[in-house]
Image (cartoon, rainbow, N blue to C red; front, side, top):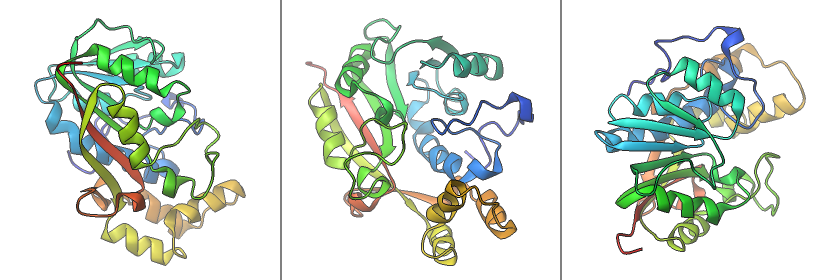
Length: 266
């Protein structure tokens, strides 16, 4: 995919946006662009993997990711708990099928999909093992679960309670691996999302952390300087790197991306 938003062919008017609650990221909002692109890069990375497959996105949010995957997939079904998000996705992305439902009681038949995508959602769930068990149930034998989540070590460093009030439990790479392998999956890749060269330059420019520069001003309700607005608005998915744990210290990653296979005998 190009580094433009997944929804670039269908630009949003202001009144079409979902409410910004802090719980989901949506495309087309300049101040959200860093976080949107950080999510988008994971969809870019896995899009070829879904070619010709029946896909479930569990926790689809605004729906832009499901719509991107639908370009190559045989079918894409979405499940989200939020009624507003579900109605928005149905209107905006008719190429996907959307259900409102609880992620620990997925409204899908056993063995009905080849691929489950769950990006930036597991950290919001109270019953994480219950959700993973549901993913196992709806996957066909040998099917894949692709899961991303903020890396607890770098997202809420040194804290037992997540910084984000919408998060219930954040995970590091070892904890995510344990969660998946305990419930019938083999994790055959643990990847990390990192800043690429251009973002590292912006980190240096903004006092060591572009993320902190945004958060500090948001928390203080300060107006962003024009230069920060321009730098954030100019970020693309290509400014992030996805690297295997064998190649870089996974504990220093921003987000984790696990690729796990449903055991055929479980």
